[in-house]
Amino acid sequence: MSEHRIYTTSFSSVYPHYVTKAERKGRSKAEVDEIIRWLTGFSQQELDLHLDNRTDFRTFLTQAPKLNPARTKITGVICGVRVEDVAAPLMREIRYLDKLIDELAKGKPMEKILRV
Image (cartoon, rainbow, N blue to C red; front, side, top):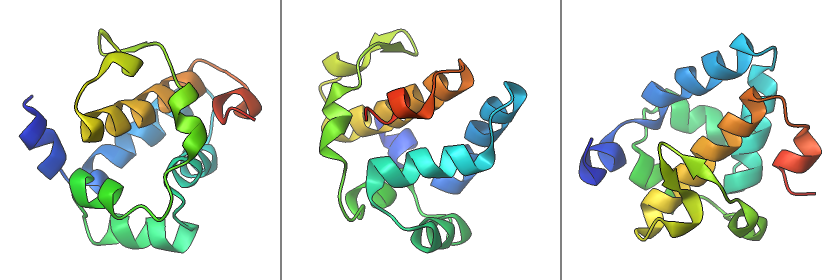
């Protein structure tokens, strides 16, 4: 899928896949939401509003109130690519989120996922 297509995909169309991936491994929607709020700085109400409005990824991430500075500690491979090597800034933000959800589904404790 091209970067442009990913950027214009609604965040709400991908969100259920994040939740399903987590729940299949015994994790919860609440944990998925906590990860998204940690990464973006959105409140739960703001997150819900973006989901209801079918905000695209580009808008969702560029309107994030405060991208967590600790996100740069997120490393590893997702979709066959090292997250820290992704050159396009917006794509890197998307891959950070993908990696965090992957860590959740793999059973990593929330403290480690959130780089506390």
